[in-house]
Length: 413
Image (cartoon, rainbow, N blue to C red; front, side, top):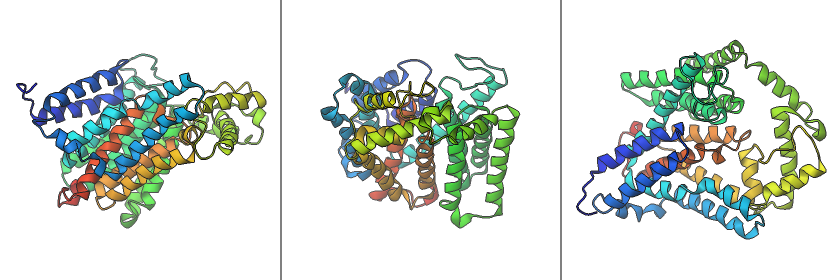
């Protein structure tokens, strides 16, 4: 191993390739292959490139400590779960976190981490172009069709890519001084905006509008002017126009009609009615196990028992809560949920003096929270791993700010 010399730059470039490819999910086991190669590179280079020294500082990062406490706590729910088979399958969504978080942290510095975040945004933008090409009939892949140009992943995942592509590229453009790069980010935003509204993901489309609204009254509040408001209104208007043009606007009307029956548990139907039904179910489970939850193995068993008492042929076949927040609370209780939220809040607080890093982090985590109201997005592949990667990339920037290693020019972060 000592005879092999691999420069740090090569390792970082591999990580960039890793980051770019993760959203695409080209083949089953892709993340496993990419992670195995990362482990091999790290084992070969950890001494010569100083990664071991850096790794030993990981627990000086408060967000990462809290994040690991959350992950450890989720595994500890084994002790109050009776259905071990479901528990094992449930915890599989976190299995790569044990590699991704420490290795990314030990390899990257703040500038490299920021480039990693930008590469995610570039990947989202290229994916949006890919989706538009499918919609235009230029490409064909898997289950995708002109009507459903989702690409290599489900529309519940691909549509969030495009929402983040719009929002995060705009944050980068807003903070960018280089005219060429600024235009590139605006181009990614425009392509992603089109891709966002030709796809089926209503949760992501609503999450986009809500996140943009939050950014206007928080991140952009000191720069809020007619131009920003006009951009927001035009983007919203363009979205409605595209939805109407491709025949997807009626799906929102149907959804709102389904919500009007929110008190009629046995009569709830359709996608949004199903989610209301599951909210009713979660209330009883959370009431019975509020602090530590039912456990990763038992929350769905309790859901099944509840559906037997409240039968509804349209909705009682579901085996998830279709809500990231309710999924975590029913599994791990408010204590586990608090650990995860605390990790994100502490991370955002540490980034608050770095405009670019704070804005992009606020965008990513706020959108994920909104989208998670209607989907279990953090427990869906490959977004589960994107979440961990984004978290550690922002944590690297926050940690180097903490120890005084961020650039003097805050616009770089």
